[in-house]
Each structure stands twice: as structure tokens, then as C-alpha cells.
Image (cartoon, rainbow, N blue to C red; front, top):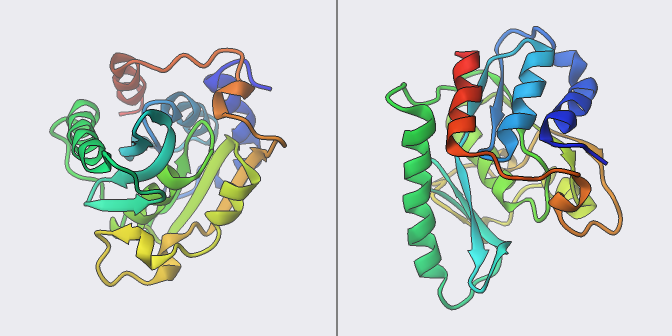
Length: 220
């Protein structure tokens, strides 16, 4: 379906033309895989690019399956609980902090007050990582949150347009449930059966930290 993530980003940008040169609009990519996609979207739409760091909480023994996700600001979205999840949480919290330092350096924290945010990733499977990103963007002040992905499961794309179950959320205080879902989900393809995100890319090698830094540096 896609040659690589850059190809996916260029195709995705065609569905987002209404945001070209939009004032108060920013593309936030979910690293690492979402950065090449987001870079092409930002380039096509003439928008600034940054990252919003989230981490999937893999199910112990099946790390590729998302049992939850965390994001900056202490946001946690849970799916399935299993033995060993506490260790997974601690490990991923350390990795989230490392990536925040690695990609954003000593720059000021994101301030999304009154902005329209395009959250971009390379695909949606369970959608838990993107749910955490949506909530984090709201906490950071975003007025409107648009999820934009090249492909995703129909379940995840639908779920992100509905409020989250409050029992599955941690770290959001008294936030309204209405702030836990996207204003819009733009998904180029929802293949059935879905399988995995990487199954729809000819090349799906994960970008390195250095490649992420270089992509961000070009836009600063």
C-alpha cells in the first residue's frame, strides 16, 4: 500500500489540504515512526513540525501488542492489565523521559494554547498510544485536535472519535470526558482484515534517534 513512511506522509497530506498555511496550526508527530510521516505532511502544508512523545505499554511477553500507553504530563491510558505491567510501566516511563530529552533538548515545553494540532503517526492498531497523545495535547492547551494517519483499524479510528472510559485513564485530574477524543480522525485506509501496521508498508524499518533529530532540525 505504501513504499515507506515518507510515501505515506505525502499521500496523507492530500487529505489535509484545508490546513495548508493555516495560522495557529502545528503538526505533532509521534516518534519515532510518525516523524517521517509528519515531516512530509508538514512540508506539504507549510506548517511547523514538532513531536509529542508517547510510549506504548506492551503486554509482557508480547511487547508488540499495546496493553496501554503513556504520554508527557503523567498521562496513562490502560487497556489490559497483566502480571509484569508495573515493570513495563517503569521501563517505558524512563524511555519516554529519555526521548523527550533526546528530541526536544533544552527547548521550552510545548505550549499548544488555542492551537489546532494535527497528530500524525504511521498507523493505528489499538489506538491507545494515539489516545494518550490526544489527551496530552488537550492538557497542553490545544483548542482542536485532529488525528491524521495513513491507515488504521476501523475499530481504532472509530474509538478515537468517542470519549474514553474514565476508568481507563490516569493523570488527567478533572478533565471532561469530551477532551479525551479527537475532533476529527483522518485515515487514508482502513484495510480489513487489518493485521498489523507494518504489513501495509514495503519498507518499515524504524527511524533512528539521529534521523528523528535531523528531521526536526530541518523544520526549526
